[in-house]
Amino acid sequence: MHLLRSGAKWEISNNVFTRWDDPRPCPSIEEVYWVIDKIKEFEDAIPTIWLPEQLEQMGVKQKEIEDAIA
Image (cartoon, rainbow, N blue to C red; front, side, top):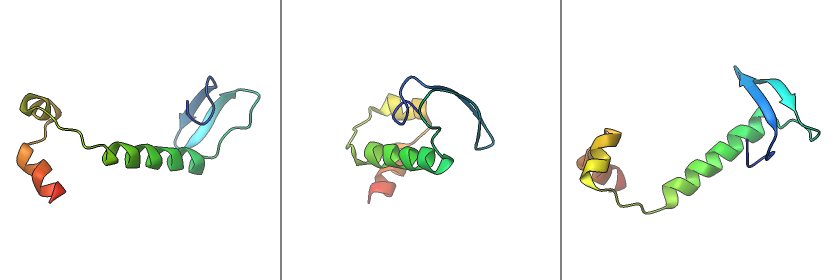
């Protein structure tokens, strides 16, 4: 939400805004999911190299990562 309406006070429940305290128009849920998708695309595009202990903390095995990339 920060990227769409920085500083807005909001609450959301079941894909519906239940509170919107900001003079700017409330974004649609489609806009929110569009931004989420863009963030995921950006994160996936970064060639992060994890340490084995970091992968272990995340519950991901190195083999699974390598298989997914291949």
